[in-house]
Length: 270
Figure 1: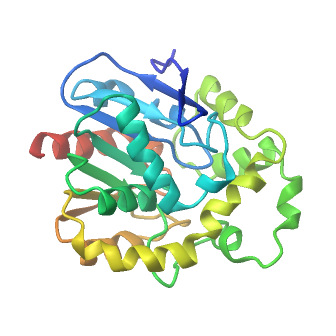
Figure 2: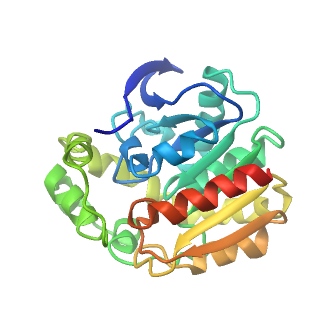
């Protein structure tokens, strides 16, 4: 049985899904990767909760949170991340944002120096020009994306879950992922990653001024977002640490023990 107990609250007029662990210091905001949900943290939740007050959030438009089209860019999502921290009265939380959270957390840190105690990111597009594997490269760059309109939850989730190596998804987690991608939701979400070419170029100019301590984590064998992306960030961010995990793209599930260990050690140092 998962320890994640989803709830909903309204933030900036949107219904946002979250889950929370027992209250303790410090606090940590965990943002869901794509195309998953807050249940992506099911395999690491117990260990992370020993070290921080966890608040896992499905970002607007992802997981089971309400979608609003104007938020589906990394920069706009970065602004919303700060609103999430404000809504939960978190003065200076850690931020954990793998995958699509990578660029959003960096935009948030760039615009709000000192707002976050630290950040843990990676497995998300960052390099300019982009260096992405399949299928993300096609999702970002295909001229005609109309065929994706027909993709239902089983198409989207099964493509992603088939890429998870060595980890059997609990049924409750798989069912939650499937339920998150009804109708044309996946097609609508594509706007976020299709903003990468322009927005990552804008982010590149901001990276050298980000003073927030950043832990960069990426699967060594990630076929979707190559390690080159975190290596690039490590070279640009003045206060960063890079670790490569023995895993593919879904490192938080494929090698949950190591992923949780690296995050909790990072928290203890920051």
